[in-house]
Length: 303
Ligand code: GUN
Image 1 (spheres, rainbow, N blue to C red):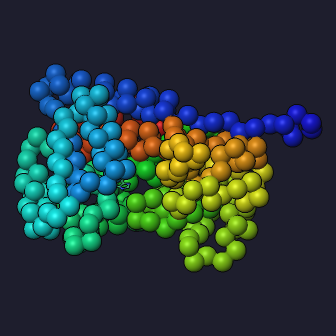
Image 2 (image 1 turned 135 degrees about the vertical axis):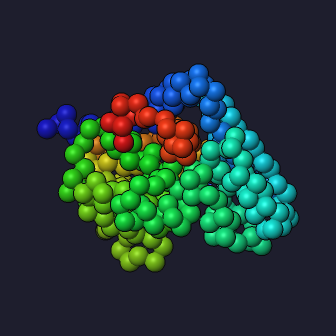
Image 3 (image 1 turned 30 degrees about the vertical axis):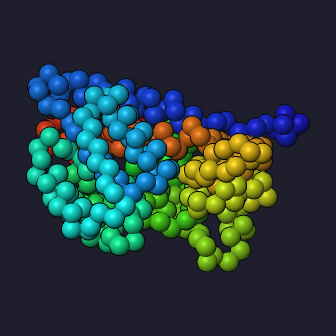
């Protein structure tokens, strides 16, 4: 009994899991290389947002690490929508490019929906366009967005039966909250999505056996919001200045949450690396599918 009181959560190590996924992707890329097939990933960033620039650089670097050819396009903040669409049109036609990623958010003068939907669905490595988003909604094959896919793989990695668990998702974005709800519904979880207009948000979160925090609000979820032994997946990557030092914190107050949860993901080193690993996975096993690449069986088990 006493022992239970002192227990802290097990950490789900996103870096370790991401490295395992990357290893599998790397092997697949090597096999393809023998047949002179070289998967390619094009990333596009518009403007100079510091955080987005770091994310995109890391995506390109990780692609290179596993042998995926990375094509990086950094466009000025004032690029016209027309020029951006023209670039995507050319990448759609380019056989060296299997996946196309446009980093979001885009500047206000550009219609993001139009841009996302201009990507060939078979190259939509983020799974954001209307066809892939719809496919997920009605259980058809398609590209699954990287961050929710990474969260699912982290949940799978701890071998907990997800069936019937109540998952509370904080945030309703197209990038995380909505696709996450669909994925966990497929896992037979019961889903609640809470958001900025939800009343009694704390009490609802406290009912969750699984909490997926994707609100973008630093340290939103504290000890009193969490059911004992819940599993906490923290999608938040928030930059704070604490005592003059830059620090990355999640949406969940880690030091408090680890005292009440059974499993928790850290920030950094949790969902972030898994998002990138899933991007590489999508590039090779989904978008480059036209090259008839077989997924290694152990990766299938993970999924
Ligand atoms: N902005 C924040 N997360 C993402 C992501 O997963 N993909 C893209 N393209 N933009 C993002």
